[in-house]
Length: 343
Image (cartoon, rainbow, N blue to C red):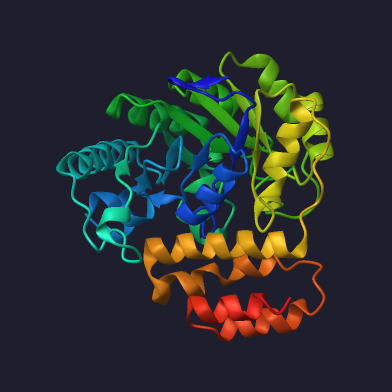
């Protein structure tokens, strides 16, 4: 499948997750075979206000592979303006060749990667969190397919980059309208649609339902990517077979377990399963992810933000509770490393 001029051989995506899919996680996912990643969701309105922290949240570097930038808001004009601002801002930064310490505090200037442009703008129409929903953004957009059309069209026309959309099945079981919403996005110019097989009301509970994704796939002419409950190669196969989707997006199943990308690609390409990672291997990957985060953000920011992800690498470890406690009280990379080395 292709999104714009980006070819995705196996259709393996990292699903965008607020608080998780930062540069560090995107790099690790890429190392294990993930073909396409997306940033955490970025407030379009904050971009139009010129908020530098927001620009930083959506920044992409040239060593990450194809990365889309996800935006959220409910106003088509704000979304379009933000997309244009981001593209101009990052193009200027890239062209200038500047590598300021504020962009990459953890490593020397010579080692800092170069700013890259997103390969697409992704529109968040699926976030179920109440503070997002109550503002009329995220999955709340699914209440109004015409608004979905207008937002998608506005973003699509604002830049030369492809526009993609992430959505759910609907607001709740009584209002499953993903078909109508997906068609509205396609008519607005979406290049691909990713669908999480849950409603807003389900949040992340219960089981994902892929029947509606299969219906959407059979009705649209653009690529459809399935998301939800993909936590093993076997689950990936079931989802692909039951939906005929062009690709799969892995979210929570990849947190603390980037080996899932390797294992799914082995399955898709007909290779024998690889051996399960050892404790030592998992610790090394966890530390590498943490180092990437520290390089990107500095210890003061990266250590607290990374704790929840690093802790998930410890799932099933003997003494995991004790190690998590030590990690949660450590303020330095060396402190977290010392705690993990006791596993």
